[in-house]
Image 1 (cartoon, rainbow, N blue to C red):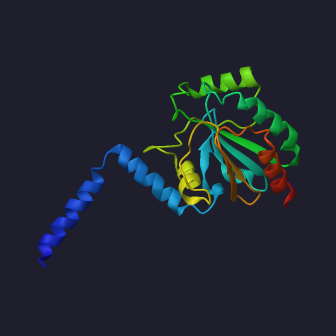
Image 2: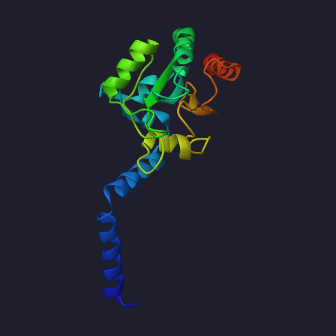
Length: 197
């Protein structure tokens, strides 16, 4: 095979990669990060005020990870989430809320607006994080990990889908968006995870 042809082909391929659109590049970088990730704790996320939070600070706790929205039929689940949090937080339970605007444009506001809404309407006291994308070409690497690399693969279907993370950072359950946080199924699994030391 002609060496100059091979070299030209490689240069063309590399050029195509270098000139990929920002969206494609972000998607590729996100997938690489998610693929390299071996633990939920490898991620650093911005909280609702824009301050970085390394998720490793939650080691040893049971976590319920939820993608949220302010103008959804499921938004009243904030009440049940807060009640669940108040019931179990002293036992090592945290809820991590990730606002997302992926479904029906139901989270259009800024982080400041989302925070104000959650505090004034639902008196939320569990951690809120900055708005991210949980689906599509700009899906955040955390959600690439949850939907592609966890034991529960599959796209997020709607606002308020829930993942349960055990004290060691393992994704141990996924609950559908319509299932209320107060449901017996969720409460039972949260208690099971909390009981495991």
